[in-house]
Image (cartoon, rainbow, N blue to C red):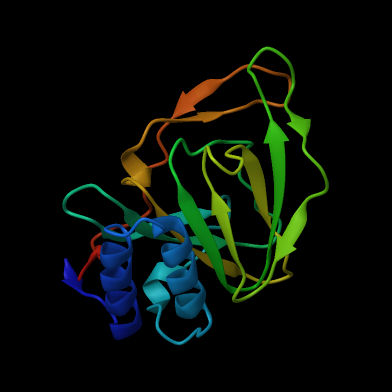
Length: 188
């Protein structure tokens, strides 16, 4: 691990402090909004797209397993499958734009839209998780690379989750991370 850039180190400390408070999700969301308000701190190695699929880079995993911070990097036209998280989370767009469409899915019938999707632009933050609607599909809504910063209430790259195929059903998956030796996670 290497030392985090100052804005990220400050955010890590804010998340640690927020998790000890009663309104943790709101405090984490506000701190994430401050972090993504400035696009001058993420090292380029953690914003590298892949030509075939989105990338998920681990920025920081809490040693006690309470949270993780991840950068998602999307080339034009890339999207997630319909998926869940199983834990609380917050997503903040750092650059570009992302379209999010929420679904209801029970695994026996095809997933169904829940209202119109919406687009998040730089500085926007959205909560995800079982309490606020946990099943969605996200896609790059920008003609260039988009980057978002996510914080989750677990080490999300190692956490069992589910994909909901368009024809129905549920498939388990663990997302993992794109990090290699040149992109180690940051210490606080």
